[in-house]
Length: 596
Image (cartoon, rainbow, N blue to C red):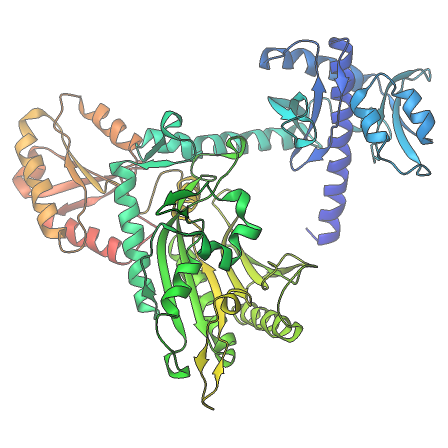
């Protein structure tokens, strides 16, 4: 589909969804007299409307609202656009506290638009303060192509000090077929939800009673994290990085110098007093890396320096935005800082971009897009530095053949950046890697190097977060694979399942031999399923645990020294000798294969 056609479709859907939001409000006001209405926009894949209701409602009320909406749609009401001055608009909405607040914010002389729903006889059925646009008539909305989905609380204008409203979410499409496809997509999202899969596979947990937004990694999740971290370290060493470890707290001087106390204070936790001085738990790793740089003098011959750290940091997030692994208060950032000469800048940018893309491909992410963020209105640093850095970022993106968009004004105040977004198996886009120039901190910490002319000069610094954080990356990874992980990072690689209790001994022997044969590659998790369950029950349980390989053994396998291999998706491989399967397993792990 061409971009123009996509735009036309999106515009049509936005009108349908916005109009459906108005119809929902019309239905709610009729069903619940005394309701006060707030706002109801279209959003991606749907719409919502906020209400102050005379009584709480639940999901059990949604079918009645849907039924009333269908009546409104089928009555073929016109959407009529009217204009008012502020005085008349205030009179029209005198009983609507949220509308009057919005109207009072309009300039005195600005035209205010209202959309009314008129019945076939011209009578007014409903009116709402709105800029539009809307469909011309409700017949343009298919009464079988929308669905009310959920109810949530939302503070008026996002302010915790304002009234708590009831928000009803819905989705609307052009045809019932489109709606059905979307609902199926949502079901797949629900099945892959990292919180659900994490619980089913015993990967991690959170404990509100001990502190919200903090992650507890269970043995299964811990095994996966170790495999990921081992790979991360190996690749960093292979690509010329050194790995640092830095403290978790620092004196207030450090955060004052870095600017965090000035620009980031609301996301930092309260200080602790040690030896009559304030210490803060770190929200970022970068100031510590700069102290290490300044620990001794540097020459141009030392540069570039590529320093990386898996450093756990802590940032305050409001409880309402915390979300499993994806939005947390404590996380391990896979941070790196590259300190280089101005002449090395462009080649380093290309190298770090190449490195980032290669890592993502190993984990099975093939669709990636860059967003080039330019200078914001408020910034520091010379214009030439901004121009040179931005051009280096652009050329690096183009050299890798990566599609990209310009994010106008989206850079940090201290430098331009590249944000890399990836698409998962369901086509959802996630913002992950960031490559960020920094003209500020080298200045604040007085970083210098001795150049070829013997003069002390200021180096350039590049921040780079590849995964962003291990926690968020792990959440995305769970949803991308739906828990069916590649064998090299799976928490359990193989289960040996005897067909009956008589073959428990052979099952144990197979498991022990496989552990011995594969021990030099990884400390693989290979279990013998020796409980009293029947064979089919054991297979179902192992499939629930999403174990890649299930080795079924009975009399024939014991006699021949072989295993029958069943994959977690139900397929089967030819029978193999124990040593042959061990080699097969090692090859899959060493190649980091995405296929079984």
